[in-house]
Length: 213
Ligand SMILES: Nc1ncnc2c1ncn2[C@@H]1O[C@H](COP(=O)(O)OP(=O)(O)OP(=O)(O)O)[C@@H](O)[C@H]1O
Image 1: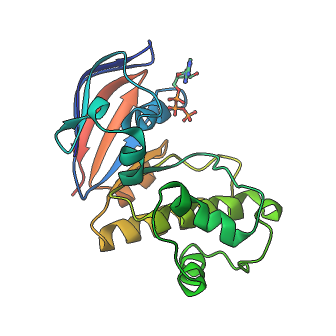
Image 2: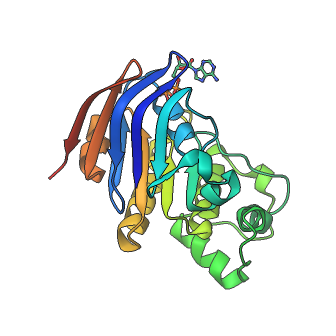
């Protein structure tokens, strides 16, 4: 799915070789500042490597238009953006940006249930708590139905319950629908519990790659 060869980014990342498998759940494990978020940002072309090559489904990223790539590879950032407008607007905006077909309120209601967000579609997105905003953003990316989810560890400001919901829902959804999930965490426990493979980064270098039984 993703193949990196001789990739460097500033003095932050230096990755001679890395493969991230299709249909699998991979955790990127490492301490704060080790380069985990930077790696995710390289994968959906928010930033570009300074040297080396990243391929997605055998195509170099520089040959794939950013909009096309980001409709297949969707990132849920640490602190997602919530737009002013209703819960409905915030769910649909991803589909609008991606120029995908919109969905009806019944489908939106099912998504809200899936992400454990007990709010009406007419409610104001701005007024939600941090954890609720994170779950709303999760609903937005699930609606996009991409091939790959990139999950950056939810902000440490969030409650553990929200973090658990987000990881467990995305893991269950990815397994059921044969999606690829690449998630960043600093917790070995989370990585071992949920993933098929663990990639450990230390100071911008990959120091371990293991398959989990
Ligand atoms: N655009 C940038 N310009 C300069 N330095 C940057 C930039 N982005 C990140 N860095 C630095 O690169 C290093 C890695 O950052 P990154 O956000 O990838 O780490 P992380 O492992 O995700 O950390 P955390 O777990 O705290 O989120 C940090 O030292 C950070 O300050």
